[in-house]
Image (cartoon, one colour):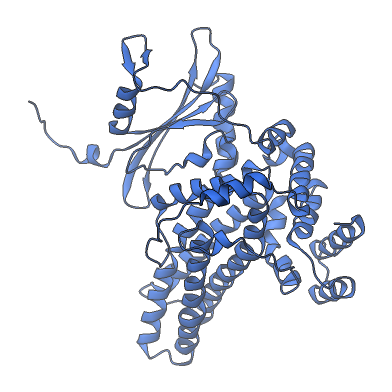
Length: 444
């Protein structure tokens, strides 16, 4: 991408961010460009952030960017693997097709008919049902956030997932608000309902565009077949949105060998990675992105520390010894979930149980813990980790009702060796709903 093109795009986006007229910006774009590709948009947005623009402002005007460039983005052909049933991208697009139909073929038409004929309760009932179904989009977003975003983070693409995760949370809130309004015993003003439903619907369809025309082409430039295999392996625990579980999929040996023989050297990948390093240098502390060294490490595909393997190796635990086989059998049976974050704030291990309270995927191993949380939670996570590092607190305790289904007790415990050296943080999560219901005694 030429510096002149990037400068022109930055100028147009800056004009918008400073309150300029959208139609005028659209004309500026048409006068200078026939088409623009994903790398150019991403690099321009990153330059704005590196220049001091808060990522939240980018997030707030993300849809304006979408509308500005829509229809002009270069068509990036997906790899054949993306078209195979069971591939994470194929699954995501299939869900998006169903979600788009739910919004545009059912929800919005029912809203319009209900406005025209409020006495006909069938349209209100159908609108309620459509909004309830739309809440299932949370599975789609959660799967993206915990299996797809780690791939992007791995290659230093940190800002786009951060922004998109924040928008995902906003969409969840908008859908919940629309549900709350249409299910009140005494319905509010029709115009209030119209605004809430329309806003939620518009944001949902805009996110489909962002995923398919921006995020997926980014991933096509950097992700390996092994990355997609890991995502596919991890995704089932989150469930699927309005579709049946997809067919099994894994990359062919030919696809793996082809990827190794011809690593990505595209201009998009280079732009994304260069911009990621620039971002880290500019504001790693202010915005919570990876430090410069972390970006270099991740772009070099830094692996987890070498592990001593072998089921028969016995480990001295101070109060006795256990074999690798015994440890692997014990941890999944513990009545609590454990996650260990090391002294460098990287996720190194978690218990792999069937019914985790907070799902974990193997793709997070070795990643910064701050990249594993939505933007609205990152500041709190940083506060906890900082105090555990400093030793001003040795643990944090929380208990709360989770989605109205579980009462959860969570501890974040700082771990130190005998000399007081910080080793990491252990997260312990436990469903204590049953304990709250206990009465009397039960002895042998």
